[in-house]
Image (cartoon, rainbow over all chains, first blue to last red; front, top):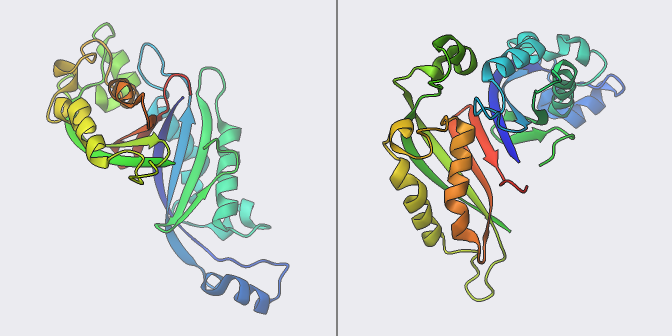
Length: 139
Length: 137
């Protein structure tokens, strides 16, 4: 099996606050992440695809096409944004668990069929010390 | 248990096929198609799978692993133009995918007794890496 991983970066802010919980419970649960005006991260997004190496080109995927897909599905909306403003996070807390799930769903929905390789794994680093891997990942 | 050792080499390459037009090469490979080449500081991470020896406590002597990586990959590839100086890249386009597969082919015969080759990861830039687990995986 061969897998190619492309790294993207985006900067966004968020505030963790669950509508179902009291203000006190939110503060106890999320701590600084519940501060009222939010805070930001330089997110690192790793998108992994697996599939055969095309015999003529020697490529698994054309990077220009993968870049365009990730840009239109994810980066255009989320880069330099407040995640709480996104429709996906009106009713869900923009934890990075929920963010990696949202991004994987968007990529799967936009993923071309045909000769395209499979989407294998989505990972996000919220900070250099926090890594989140999508649940559909093979490794 | 898995153990991973890192090595680096700096090489130039060009991704183009002489049997394709310039336009087709540019469409498929983008800037990488420049026939005079360009370079990368490649970072190689080689992962072996095995059990620690009950006496030495080691899966493999990392000194031996370092020597193998140097002999099979770093010494031949470092400061070379892959298309012109390293087989099979005179006929196989040295994409990151094909370089990773070639490194696996060169390393794998060294790990048939004891620790086995599990994964070859090749970073071409900070934003692109390839993992290869062999033909059968």
